Image 1: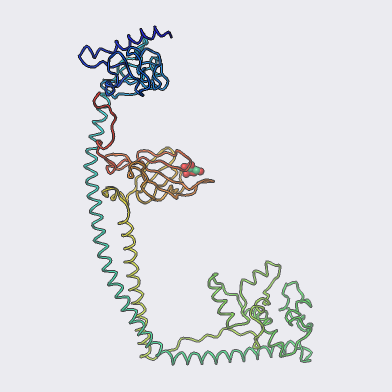
Image 2: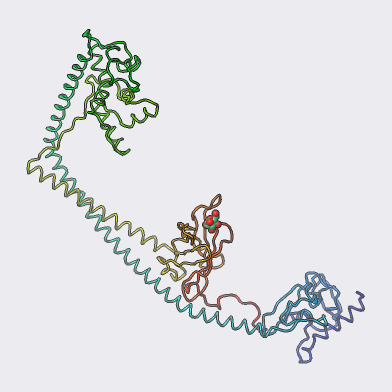
Length: 536
Ligand code: MAN
C-alpha cells in the first residue's frame, strides 16, 4: 500500500475510535487496552513502545507497520506478532493476535475485531456472555459456600478422629508397658517352673533312656536272630554260604516282576558277590533283603504322609532304622520301569555300618508320673500357657499401635478434611465396568459381565501439581498385559456430596477419576481471576 493511503487510513482509524475525546477523556487508538491508553498520548509524534523509533502520531493504525515491536498498529493486522485488545465491555477483555483483525471471523464478543468488514455478521454478545458468566460464578460461589460449610464439618470430624487416635495411642502405649511387665513376670515364672520341672523329670528321663536302650538292644538281637534264621532257610545246600542260585529260587527277589529272578537281580541282594557267608549276610545283605520279604509277607505297607511329614519321618526313621524305605522311592523306581522297591539308595545314603540288619524304630511310651511330679508338670504347663497368652496380648497391642501410628502419620488434607473418607468406598458404573474408589486404600475395576475385581492401584500420595490436595495417586495396581502396572489419578472437585462422577482411561491402564466431595471446596476468591473486573 502507498504511504499516502496509509496515512489517510490512519486518520480514519485513529479518529474513528477517538469518540472518548468527545467525552473529555484521552483518546484511545483502536486495539489498545484502557490500561495502556497513557502509552499513546495524543500529539504530533508517537514513540514506538520499545523506544526505537519516533513516527507521526497519525501513522498509528495506518495499516503500515512502522515500529519493530508492532506497537504502532494495535488495531490492524499490519504488524506481525501484533496484539489487538478487545475491550469486550460487559464481559472479559481479551488480547488476540492482530492477524485476526478483519479476517471475517468474530474473535471478540464486542465484534470490535471485525470493524473493517462492511457486512460482518459479528454482533456484540458481551452482555449476554457476561450475564451467563456472572450467573455461573454466582452458582459456583453458592456451591463453594455450602461446600465450605460442609468441609468445615468434615475437618472438625477429622480433627476429632485425630484427637481420639492420639488419646488411644497414649492409652495403648501405657497398656503396652503393662503388658510387657506382665510378659517379663510370666517369663520368669515359666523359667522357674521349668527349672523345677527339669529337675523332677531328670529321674524319669534316665529311666526312659534306659528303657529305650534296652529295647534297642533287644530289637537288634531279634533282628540278628531273624537274619540268622533267614540265612539258614536260604542256605538250602547248607554249605554255610548263600549263593546266587539260592536267591534265584525265591520270587521275593524278582524286582522287575517279570516272573524270574535274574542273576543280576540276585547279585544285587548279595552285595554284588557270587556268594556271602553269614557275617556278610547279616551285616550287609540283610538290610536289603528284609524289606522285600516284609513286602511279600504283607507286613510292610508304605505309610501315607504329606510331604512335610515324610521329611520329618524320613529324618527320624533314617536316624534309627537303617532298613526304612521311603515310600516315594517306590514311585521313582516305578517311573523307571521297575516293579518294586529298590532299597539300594537307602542303603547308600544310610551307609553299610549296620551289623544288625533291618531294625525298626524304638519308641517308649510316656511314663506314669507320680502325683507330685505330675503337679510340677501341670504347673510348668500352666506357666508356659500364661506366657504365651501374655505374649499374644503384647503382640495385639503392638499391632494396634502400628496401625494407629500409620493413620496418625497419614496426610488427610490441610485440615484433616479428607480423614472421614477412609474406610468408605464409592462406585461408578460405565457401560463395561464398575469402578470403585476407596480413599486412602485402593481404586479398582470390575467387569459388569462378571469376573474378578482388578486393582487399579493402592493409595500412594497426594499428587496435585499446583495445589497438592487437588489430586490423589493410586499406584502399583495389577500389571497390564505386556505393559506397566495399572495406576489411577483422582481429580477432586468441589461437590455437596462424596461421589465419583466420571472415570476414563486416557492411556492404556492409566485411569482418571473425577471425585466430588465437599472436602475439595475452596473459597473462590482464592482462585486467580482475569484482569476483567474493571471492564465488566
Ligand atoms: C482390562 C481392563 C482395561 C485395560 C485392559 C488392558 O481389559 O483393565 O481397562 O485396558 O485390561 O489389557
